[in-house]
Length: 117
Image 1 (cartoon, rainbow, N blue to C red):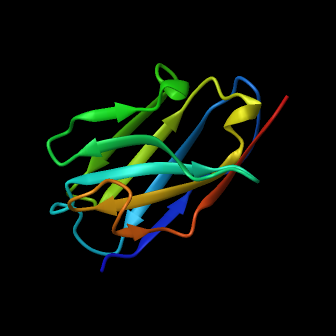
Image 2: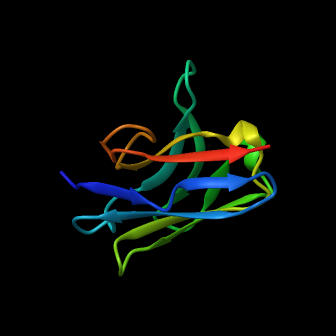
């Protein structure tokens, strides 16, 4: 089972940007779905963005036009570029690697993103 380590979180003002990275301990080539999810205090974990092994992307409506997901199979890494951040984007962001069902499989430990108003 692959281990995932997220990095790049932090504190940023509204309107700012952050770039999250997810480094895998092994090859991500075989994972059909690499995704970013987030969980705010008192809320359920929710999908932010997914990228398939073929490079197709899918975004939650609340991040469309602001966030961009990408994957580099050669470097075993997935990134999430977050622009125009809003206070409601504050959450712990998690990386996920799944073969058959998005949101199943392996999870990272999460990285905190805090957006101040």
